[in-house]
Amino acid sequence: MESDTEKHKYLIKPKYILNTDKGYSYVKNVFRINKNDQIQMVIIQHEFGLFSNTANDFMKFVQDITKPIIFCFHTILPHPNKALLEQVQKLSKKAIALIVMTENAARILIEEYKIPSSKINIIPHGTHLVLPVDRIQLKRTYGFKDRTILSTFGLLSSTKNIETTSRALPKVIQKHPDVTFLVLGKTHPTVQKNEGEVYRNQLQKLVLELELQNNVQFVNEFLQLPQLLNYLQLTDIYLFTSKDPNQAVSGTFAYAISSGCRVISTPIPHAVEVIGHDKGLIFDFENAEELSQAILHLMKHKQLREDISLNSSQSMVSTSWQNTSISHALLFEKFLSKPFHLKYAWPDLKLDHLKRMTTTVGMIQFAKNAIPDIHSGYTLDDNARALIVACEQYSMAKDMDSFMLIQTYFRFVKFCAQSDGTF
Image (cartoon, rainbow, N blue to C red):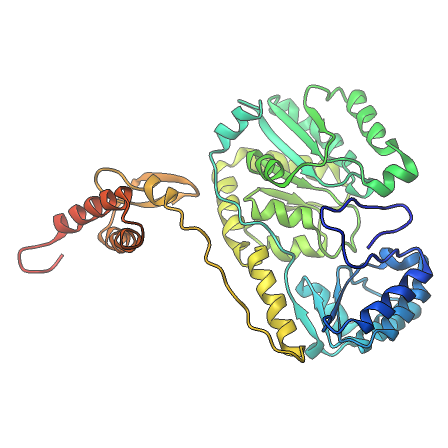
């Protein structure tokens, strides 16, 4: 999808392009979709703002499509007026199924829009599987040695409400002068086209007024994924400060949580649902005082920070793109006239962490994320299972690394064996 103000460059040219500002574009595309026998189903990623300039053309486009339609609603506004209620109900009636990303969105659809629950499917926003890294070493690599890093990222616009963080920082810096706040990301292209850099300039002016220039850094670029994930993993505390209470879901928030960030967030429904009691802190919209207290509280309690990081990264595995894609495919499979079979590819086997957890004695029992906890000692059951893994790997690869691991784990098992056959 494109618009008059947003044009994209493509490595591979897409088969169809829908200009959401042009009525004729809907007519052209619905004709081509209906005529293409290879298209079995149409999935529409729906955000109200995408179709606001041509609402009637969009509704006709939906009604004229002869293929089964599934809507993925990115935003579900509570307390709808009559027009909005009728619009969503009409879209839902046309659809064979609906996808939302949170329990809260599903509840609003059922209770306020009167959509049958049988039509609604909850599939979380996808995230990346992020391997734990040494945060201290990563800070050195990026030039932040001995700094406490706060960060936020995303395409910059006033809805990010970053000025709240700026106003919260002076109290934090009084106690922790080593703090650096990173604002990661370019200005949103639509904002850039309509307003230029007005918002970024306002933020930079506020930084000067509050004398924060030594503690705030703007990274004004669109970060490629590996670099973005590095920034998130070197972050000590991630700040999500959106001022829109109706923002149903946030990709930036999801990425931060899945990267193991300690997140402090405003109470958008997505954040409240995901954070719960053990994966971050919540503060009220535009409340700089409350935000500064939350930051100071996390900085004071190291164990709390470690617990939040571990809980966050582990709980979000189910929302990885790999898992959410399977959830989508299983849903599509129910409605396709021509059946297909899902094919799964095994990822490359990596023994890095297994080796990191292994000493000359055997496999260490526990780790704190990627860091082995030598104080947890060694157990027979862990080393027995590690022996099985090493044997399986050697049977496939016939590699010396696996052979050495087999010897280490077998020595440990043998050491635990008693003369009567017990362990």
